[in-house]
Amino acid sequence: MPSLVDQFCPNVHDVAITAACYDPHTGAMATADAAGVVAVQRPGESTPQLVFHPGEGVRGALGLIAGASMVAVGDEAGTVGVYRCDNGLAVFQEAREGARGRIRAMRGVALSPEGRTLATIAKDGLVRLWDLENGQRTAAWQGFGGDTVQFDPRGQRLLAMDDQGQPRLMDLMSLQALYMDKLQMPADRAVFTLDGTMIVAAGQAGISLLRVADGALIASFATRGGSGIQSLILSPDGQQAGAVTQRSVHTFTLPDLQPSGSLKHGAPDPTGAAVWTHQGIKVAGSDGLMHGGGSGASAGPVTCVGGFGETRLAAHGASVAVWRGNRRELELQADGAPREVHVDRDGRLAVVVPQRGPVQVFDCKRGKRVFDAGPTSSGCAAVGVGGNVVAVLLKRGGLRWWDLAQNKGFELEWPRAMALSNGGTWLGVVTPKGAVKVLDPATGRDAVPAPVPLADVPIKAMAFVNRRPDLLVMDEDGVLGHYDLGEALRQGRPGEGRDVLTVNVPVDQLWGITGGQHCAMRLPEGDRCTILWVDVHACEVVHEVTGLAPNTWVDAEHGLILEPARSGALLEREMDGRERRVLRALPEGEWLSFGWRGILDASQGASGAI
Image (cartoon, rainbow, N blue to C red; front, side):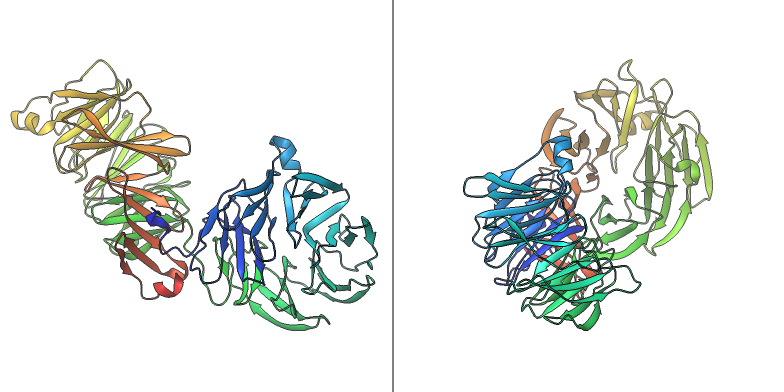
């Protein structure tokens, strides 16, 4: 069954698109990004139906065969391959390992019209040819450069740029270079016109036109000032050429190369990838979208998530979207990209932990910043928010917390771990010897008698159970323990706990779920994580959800897994890992939420952004 995340998806790239190509015969477009994801979209598809990940990041080296049955991809690791456009399976692939591959990082690829030959230009200055019928390399020519390589419409000639910025045309039958006039403005890219009779070349300084028959330089046009030409595109009918700059696309008529117009493309931080489709010019931006025809910027990928009860937080760069139920209500503007975002269980206060800089607290109803925890909170080890209390475990050691309603602050120099109850009533701390104390955040004094240690082993992590006077602890041997502090409080004696089970792998986050039946643990596993669900009373693992994003969070109110997902989304999962709901940011500031039964809610212009 297709993933819920793949529905209502306006784009498939969560990082900058760094390569794009278009087949004017079929209207198919291929894109690739800096992470190595390749997508092929055909006319009539609202989103690409082929998305695959053949290797590492791609920089310009992407090419569709005429008819769009195959796509060639070259990556930054020196791997080059040809893949079927219906299923992404490799027709041909050659890889280089380690430093050998990096030396030949690919800059341009091309497939001959009949599909028998693959050509590439690499960072090492070699143009290479492969016979795809037997998978053998047939030629390697030195002294080349630039970012393009292309076959003429008959597949008889190969066009590339030499290391001096001059176009070189090779006759593939005689293997001889054909004469071309020297360009006055060196170029880094060149393409055949649609009929193969002309060559358009462009570089930072300008654009030039040459005739294939005799190699004569017909016309040239120099840029004056500006950011220089980043990319060269041709219209699908072959009647115009486009020079893409940082902000605009300047068009020229063919075959006389006369300026015909300019337009703003709207791409943020354009990467140089661009195409001219039957629907218009599209230019790639750093936001993972192709811009043109009025398209707006996307919110960007979701980098971290948080949530409690009906409130969800999704960080897009320095902007944190606040969702209530199925609706996105507002955005919080933080100082820099967060590494963690937290919200209290009533959805009033949001705590943003930036990758750099102090912890910030926002009013989730108004979107205003209400508190800054100061420079000592930078790089903090943990934070907690509950009621009006915000607590920060400092990087240098010790604990600070603030009662924002009373405008009071407190500090202890000795805690080595902490947990704040979700209502802000209790503050649990671990002493230098590894014992647990439960404090009243309003005074800093003991709220209940210190619990009796379960073993002579220091505690390293703990969490209060939501809406219950229960405390979960984990010691340095990986033993999970449970305390019922309500009984101890009523009887005025230290709480006595019990061992639940032993977890023999590292745990970096612990949650106590409403009702007290279950707790959740996050197990880091490289660039992934696992959420382990434990029945606290039965003392057994009931669910293990693997392969999640490393910063996946758990809503302790409802027992739901919250995970960043591609295309600007926050994905909710059930306790057993089943996808439940998606909250997605769309281009142009639009949004929508949806589940398996369809759209739950959406902004007014969402349909135009999908």
